[in-house]
Structure formats: C-alpha cells, structure tokens
Image (cartoon, rainbow, N blue to C red; front, top):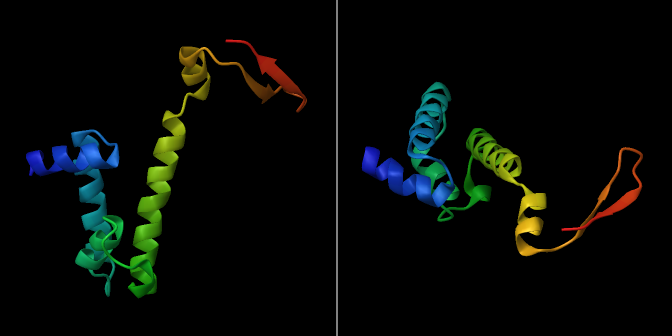
Length: 104
C-alpha cells in the first residue's frame, strides 16, 4: 500500500503521507455516500472515465477532489521566487490597486 501511495503521490503532487490521507478521506466519503461507485470516481480522477457519466453524488466527490487539488497547487505557488530565479521583472498591484513593476 505504501509503495502504491508513493507512486500515486508522485503523479498527484502529494507526499506519500498526504496520498494515504487522501485515500482514507476518499474511502470514508465513498462509504458514507450510498449510490457512489468508488471505481467510477477513481476512473474519472485518473482521466480514464467520463465525468458526465457519473451520478450527481459521484460528481460531487470528483469536484471535491479537484477543488482540493487546485487549492493545494495555488498554495504552493511562489511566482515571485520563480521570476527572481529566472532574472525576470514582473508587475503586481500595490495596496491601492495601482500597478508596480518589481525588478528582479
């Protein structure tokens, strides 16, 4: 299980511990939701199934997973560091909403 979680974690951008916790949460939610096919949900999350073919409850499980993934990726963004590392300037808004160019 740990090895499978390690492989899946690399694909999903999670640590192995985060992947195991994700699977535990997903399993808990699926068991608590009658009429939800774990296999169908996993196929959609893996990109091998159709979201439109899922039931309303299954779609909700998929959307929750997608939302968590997006939130995790946004939290990990550090564009200022990426621009600095690339030696690039960038423009951002100051506290009044006015554009300010930041030199690398």
